[in-house]
Length: 209
Image (tube, rainbow, N blue to C red; front, side, top):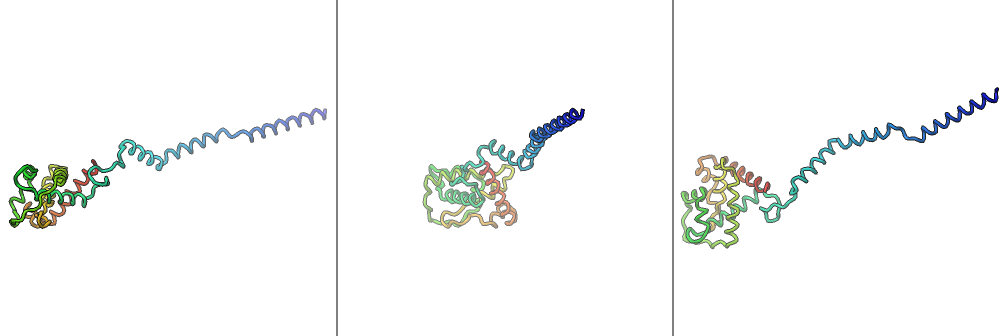
């Protein structure tokens, strides 16, 4: 009788030990679920959403790093670049003859060019050198930037256009700030602000392609 009891006890101990070893060897069933939740939270983190949004915008536009076609080096346009190009175009325009097969007659219809005719600079018999064909082509292209200023901001157009006109003999502005202020009937400080606003609008338009 005692032998049977001892054998039963040993069998139970062996079975219990086997179950413990099996539970230790097998990974817990809840661990994969916890890992899945952690991965899901990481994917939904703010940084991951930001990175995904940036990647989506870059992929949608496909040209975020595309060179700017309006600048020689493809870099974004700046107010300084736009002003320099406009002044070169204004210098070329003022050097063109009033008659003959040039674009002077067409560009002369612009209101800021008419302002020069109403307020002529001192007359001189010296004739400036005739601009090259490349300069004239560049002038036509650059002066087309001024209408990029919205039509309802016509005063900004007039200020930017008049300020870009330079004397081909002296290289000076045909309109000083005070003279331009008198032409538009405003304070010269306000005219300077409007000029900066007009350049900013052109820059934004050029950088937006």
